[in-house]
Image 1: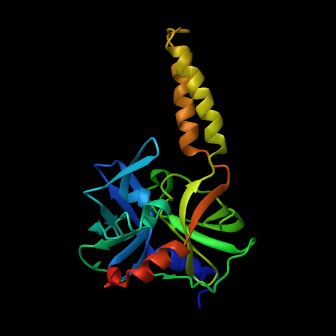
Image 2 (image 1 turned 180 degrees about the vertical axis):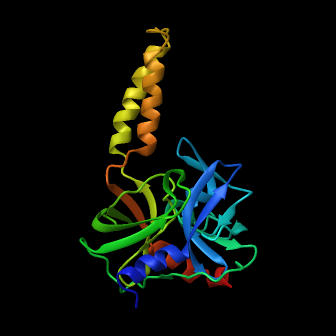
Image 3 (image 1 turned 90 degrees about the vertical axis):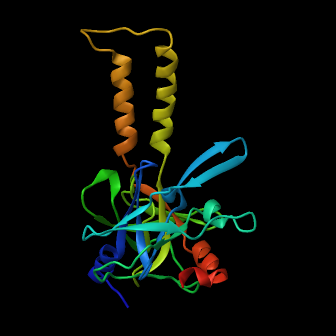
Length: 252
């Protein structure tokens, strides 16, 4: 049973970074087996929406980077199908490493369905947000759930790059997968971006050699990338747990 600082250490020693150069993608993940990593589907694939259809393609050059610096190629083995699209719809992915890491690392275990998560519970997660050169670990608190309990609302600083990190309870078990930050501020910035784009189409004005609309657009893009409202979301682990329960051969 992990407690306190032990959970923090477990979060750090089981955490990895996933990178795709072709997809210009970087996210986080956690070891759940000596050759398996759990992460978000949107970390390992390119997604596009056309009407009511979601198209996706897996990154062909997925790399898993360990805190030691060791890098191992990985392959997604939880591929969505018409029969079971839950990896896509619930945003989780299982990645199999091409080889075992040279150095021994910790592994985390999925929480059982008997480990109820409550509002006010402490949680811990680690990841590589905002292109940080090293792993960053956070303590947070469960602040709520959506109506279906598929989303966990987490009071903590969650940013781009945290996606895929394991959300651990005070037993050190995975209760969720960090998925996204709260987007309220982004909505306001997007509205301003739309206004600027419309205004820019009518021509530009420079003041002392500076285009104020272009400068404001750059500021918006920076704010949207770096500002966190302190609330983020994690996908409940129950979907990944059920999927692996139906497909136990994936972990062999």
